[in-house]
Image (cartoon, rainbow, N blue to C red; front, side, top):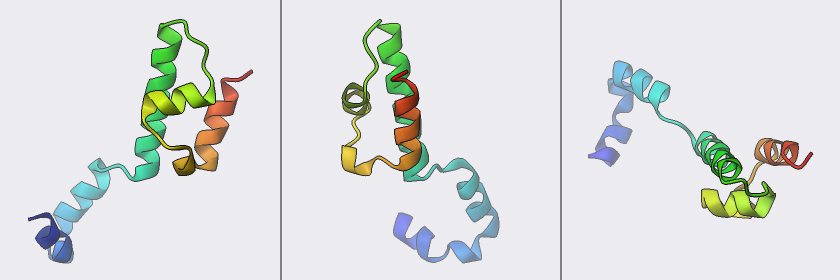
Length: 77
């Protein structure tokens, strides 16, 4: 069904608008997971560093963008 919907989404403008509004892209998903991982580590009193956050969030280092790196670096200070 998903492939069929994707092929004909231009015929369903309201559906496309809704999906664009509620779905997050990969970057937003990774950013949300990073924020969650940082919060979890802080609640446990653990040191927040890049490798721990990425491991907790389940994100590979090669998938980290500049925006996410800035967020991670802000917690080093």
